[in-house]
Length: 86
Image (cartoon, rainbow, N blue to C red):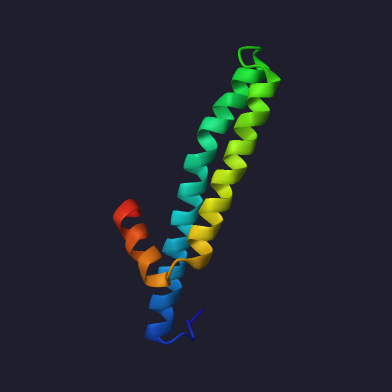
C-alpha cells in the first residue's frame, strides 16, 4: 500500500516514532528497579512498607518523566532520543 504522506510528513512520523520509543525506554529503565523490588518483596527479602515507599518514589519519578515528554520541545526530545537510542 502506498503512503499518502509527503516526505516532510514521513520524516515527522519517523521522528515521533523515535521519541515514542525513547519514552518507552526511559519509562522501562525507571520501572526495572521497582520490578526487582517486587521480586524481593515476594520472596520475603523486602518488607511491604519499604516496597510501598519505592512505589511512591517511582510514581513521583514517572510524573517527572511525563512532564519531560509533555513539555519539552519536540526538537530537544528528538536530539535526546537520537543520542540515547541510535
